[in-house]
Amino acid sequence: MKYLIAVLLLVSAQSWASDVKIISYGPKSGPTTNLGTLISKELVSNPTVIATGDCQEAARQFDSERSVIGVIGHASVVKGQTVGKKCSLPFDQKILFAVTGYYSVCHMKSHNGQMTTNSRISIPAVFPSKKFVDEFNQDNQAKLRVINVPGGGEAMASLLSGDVDFTLLPHFSAVKSESEGQIVCRSLNPQDSTYLGKQHKIRSEPFYFMVFIVTKGLNTEQNNDIVKALKSQSVQTWLSATAWKNAVIEPTAKDMERINKVIESHRQLYLQ
Image 1 (tube, rainbow, N blue to C red):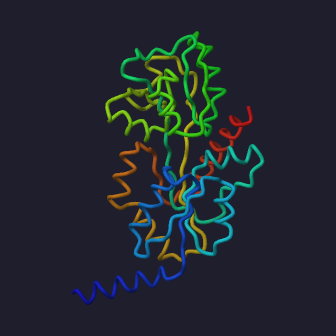
Image 2 (cartoon, rainbow, N blue to C red; image 1 turned 180 degrees about the vertical axis):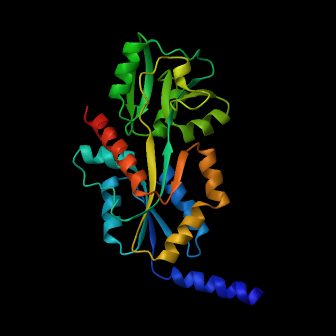
Image 3 (tube, rainbow, N blue to C red; image 1 turned 60 degrees about the horizontal axis):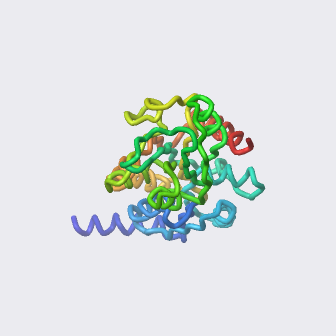
């Protein structure tokens, strides 16, 4: 039996003999990199995870590799495209996975949670805030003052320092921060029990983000290994902890038609 297991592992390793890399379209500490690292740990060859933090450089590296796995957040790519960067969503390649994540609005426990006139809110750059804030102010007789910050880390820091009354965080960051006991968060996902719309008027579904696993130059066995990794307990536990929703493994053409419509609607938000 031990000999059989050794042979099976050897065969699996040989199928990954080529120098396959995982390209994360995000920073080293970001969710696309975290997901890429989890996938790498589940694969026999433990592919190297490369995170550039820039969609243009990530796209260049993905395109230049013969065999590659991309972990792609659509928001940074679409935002990059609208400001002239050469970012791309390689949907002409094999798409193995798609998942949706929402944002949360958080405040300190000592705050009453009411977003009113002159409330200050920090918002990461990747979130297209104009429509959401304009509608919120109009419908709630508020006057939110937006403080733009580079990312979730800076957003959280601005809240903890008292520079703002509220901050907007990806829900996976909000869950972790809230568990530490200092803050309270309200989700922008209408299906969540903590939906912000239960306290304030929300006109339409706010912007959410999507993450994709796309491969290029991999054979059927390698793609099947990645699917197995995505179904593994470690990845599924992490997805649950990050509160990502509607995970789809090997999306169909109909799935992608729906997803592309969402992406185009989000592109318009960035152009406002």
